[in-house]
Amino acid sequence: MLSNEAQELSELLIANGLTVSVAESCTGGSVSRALTSIPGASSYFDCGYITYSNQSKVEMLGVDIQTIKTYGAVSVEVALEMVIGVATKSHSDIAISITGVAGPTGGTLEKPVGMVCFGFSCFDKTSTSRQLFSGDRVSIISQSVSFALRQISFRF
Image (cartoon, rainbow, N blue to C red; front, top):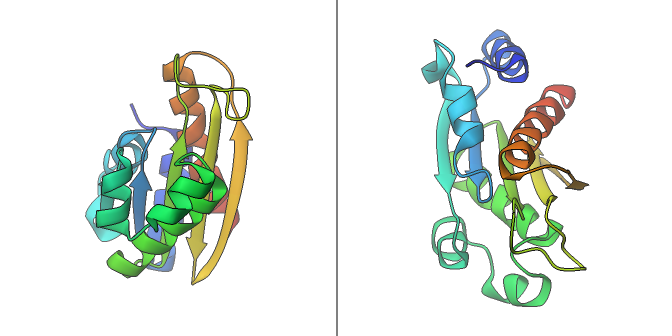
């Protein structure tokens, strides 16, 4: 099923001749799937990394292990390093990173189920966001994907 957010973003990317790459943790490839489910995705989608483990975040994206030890894998600090890593490795115009707690387990008082951190890189300008979504695992992942795609569309 095609999402409205993915369709709108794909049209913006195509119209502007831009490329996008993604680094996903808690969404497990759902953003990549949304973007590549649209015909013509090869013109704008460069690559997607699914870096679920801390080791893969370090080895594939260049996230500093000390950042993970200090702030935890679910943090805006790690999301920022993830998006910088994917933007650098892909050379895309736009990059997205997502790390969070989709649940139903794994949450803490400081980082409850539904806390998701995002990194965005558009034309070498980076930003982060921390959101708290509610619902079950599928709903949290779906809300995370929609949020990420909307945020990128708003940035250009």
